[in-house]
Length: 348
Image (cartoon, rainbow, N blue to C red; front, side, top):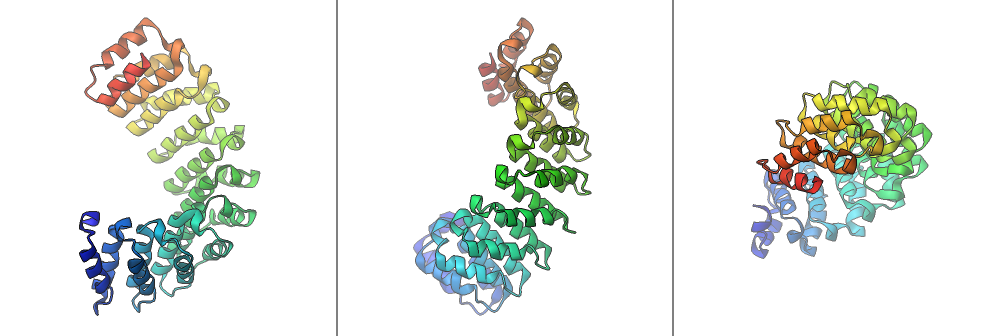
């Protein structure tokens, strides 16, 4: 029932239940308080959850961590952060993982040198979920965590035996953006599209996307073009996104032609992304062939593709303003989906 049940009476009863003799009940009480979010973020609740970090049962300790992460900013006090740092040494891997997650949720508020150093140490944890959680947390810590040491450790994590860790390392480097956009990092991410796991390949594309203009080299662009043929649709989508974000720097004939080909992709999300980002390529993409293919996409069976085609034609602007294009956009004003109609109006 979440926030709707978050009355003082209910919260007080749940706080009392944190002392129940049954571990399942104590764990459920943690979950319930967490689900109530900020409405449960009273000093008493936070103090009791901090006490529950010392529970004899690891599931309860883990549940208390998660609950502290869900009750919002009021829980991001020095005392709570210190207890979460201590939980990184817990014998239960689920507790260590939960502590990483919650410190990540607290973001820059928790980004002290001590916390960052402890999370870097957690990158060497024996448990892969903890290593993955440490990557996640470091990525959410903002600029304070984007030091050479942290970045180098995340680059090393790209070689982890576990695919979840490798993917989390990609995401963290992407979250650090241009601060992580060093040649060594970019080169390692360029090799990640060869990873056996599609989530890692997609994560590498995401990271390159977030690194801005420094990543828009010929080598990177060529690897992203190759990723448009990946067997994983999520990888193809991420590649479209990364190329589109690079804008005119990536607007070579080869890139434009490959994005046009992606308009026939079997996955509608790929087709939609290809439409949208063709519109972001600038004048070089405003050719008759591209415009004709976008007009054809106005008849796509998927509403998201039709919407993206409208938006792309809008971005291309006057160069697309032929009678045929205008007439087709007028016909789209009768689309069954309102935001497709809206995009068509805007394009006209």
